[in-house]
Image (cartoon, rainbow, N blue to C red; front, side, top):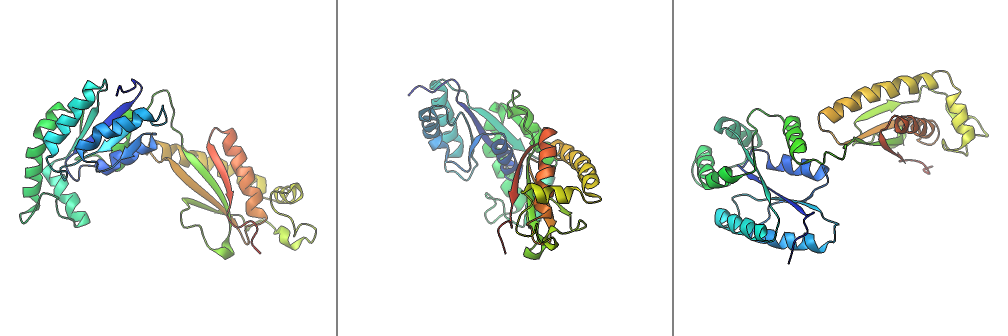
Length: 291
């Protein structure tokens, strides 16, 4: 089967503990279809599936490691077969110094996959030997010994991101009621209970913060507009930092007592302001509709 020229394939491999999982997550965030721990012999099958998708899967990243039997020979055979189909699989090889690898394995208290009954360094040495030829033919070799997670993500994004696409932070603004508990996945939490509660205004009580009357009431209170102005500026500063550090998703929670009036109105206003600033944002009202 002839592989479409548009189909791209990256093989992520290298030393255990050198950052394969981090690189895979970064590629996934960049829009690649990622398959983890695939036996090398199945690589041509993945290419076939990608070619049949009619463009739905245009970029495939496959993570392979030495746990696969006959790793080196199987991978070389698979890459040669794919090359015959008209596609060059780029190989990303991740490595690190022995000291860094030992420190990482000890921090997670896991043995090296090739350690057996020997020492940790024995497993590392054995793996280096098995991967020596593959490292020599890799398209990109990254030494992660002194890289933190964000620096590694930045290098992977620079090598495999689409320069025509500017990957921006994807933001969720979530309204909630404190009486139902804090959102456990929130990156930032704002408390708008300093504003008077529309619940105590009889004609507003049945409505929600999405209704114009409640919205106007909340925004007319002292401090409401000032809070939005200052919090918008603070969030822009934080989001710029998130993007520099490679963070792709963030959740900003805005809470009031019941999650019906103030938090809903302020979340809608905040999201609208951030959208005008160019942030990709969606609004979720977690507790709207509760009693």
